[in-house]
Image (cartoon, rainbow, N blue to C red; front, side, top):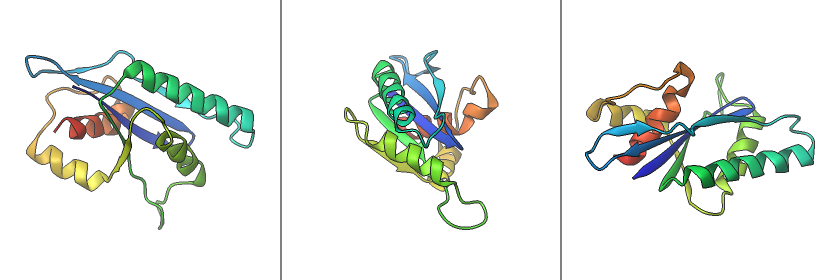
Length: 135
């Protein structure tokens, strides 16, 4: 089974694909990547971003996809651009995309700790979301 965890930070979507092999071990796909939305006011750029995200999701061919939920209110709320990116990803036509709360993922990880680590620190939350989907 292959899952894709996505974290949105400002104008960038971090995609990390995690696969459970036949022997039960976990592997991070080398195709994991980050895609940035440049000049979000330009509709051509938004369409190119959507095409890039959808193409990457097609390549990853994940069985399930989840985005880490961001705060919509309060002092640490996410910006409008990140919600624009989220809506583009949610419109992915080939698979359902779910939104998971960080607290839900954290509770899952307490009971099911990860046996591998992300290559880069910034991939940690996307990896946790992908691991949650495998559970």
